[in-house]
Amino acid sequence: MKQIALNRLDELFAAISARQTLLIPQQLENGDAEFRPWSAEAKLYTGLKTSRSAKDAFFPQVENLVGFKVSEQGIELMDTRDEVQPFTLFGVRGCDARSFDILDRVFLAEPVDTFYADRRAAATVVTLACNRPETTCFCQSFGIDPSRPAGDVTCWMDAENLYWQPNTDKGRALTEALSLLEEGEEARAKRVEEDIQAVLKRLPLKDLSLDHVGAGKTKALFDRPEWAELSEACLGCGACTFVCPTCQCYDIEEFKSGGSVRRFRCWDSCMYSDFTLMSAGQPRPTQTERFRQRFMHKLVYYPDNQDGLFSCVGCGRCLVKCPIHMNIVKVINALKEGTA
Image 1 (tube, rainbow, N blue to C red):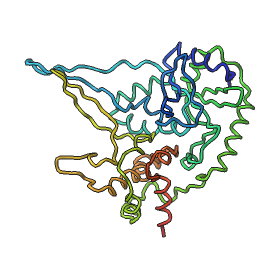
Image 2: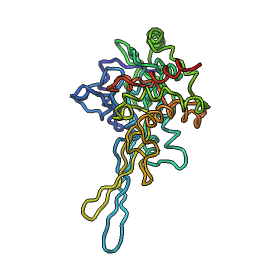
Image 3: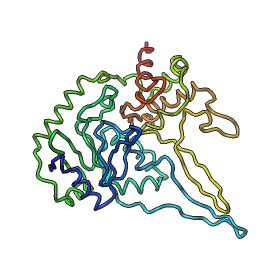
Image 4: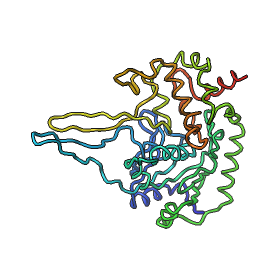
């Protein structure tokens, strides 16, 4: 284990940035926090979670895929892809680190999404334990330990130091390149971990049960009457999907300018009325059906296809951002209460 004093964090960031691009959570002028490239003026966001998840580093909201140049001679294909350079993603929380595993099973399955795969291969993920988990956190229900998050490097922070534990070959390579890291006191990092565990025992959602959802529950849950009541106030705004670290739906659009055409993809939401709209019509014409699709995918369909793994990481962002205060925890509890 290594460590560095907190008052030397900028030195650490500068050393990493000199080696490759470094992304850290930073607070924006509007109060939100996002992962942005580090600069000498940048300040590490000290809150728990960024407003949008770290998935942007691998699956950006908008992405150019390819271009076409149209002329009298025909159509010329233009490769608009930039070469992906190695980068470090620092300060990822345990919930977001788990989300990468969930996204990997989608984008790295055949046929592999090479845009996503290139970014994953180029990244070194440095996670940071959650010193003060919030009342909206429920990652423990999904088997995530926020006191010891996964990643190429795991870090803990107390009032004086950052403790640094490499876990993978990528993490060890980065560690070896940072000579300013000193030998660390593992006992002090362990105390941080124990303090976090004490907080976790007091969280209001610590006992959230998932026994009534999961793989094999489609028949039991699909026609439940609770869906109509739960979805009644839903605005279909998609806020929950845009802050979710595991949502992977996207749309493909083309933009014509003069003699060229740009094809890009952008995030989409299953909560929108035109999502998967086809010439034959909308397969889910009501908000209730679209609402049910979102939560059944998280809690049943994805586990069905991925060895029981849920497509939710308990980050709590949907609890915070939904304008009508509807979220996956309310859905889970409502389905449980209706179980005979």
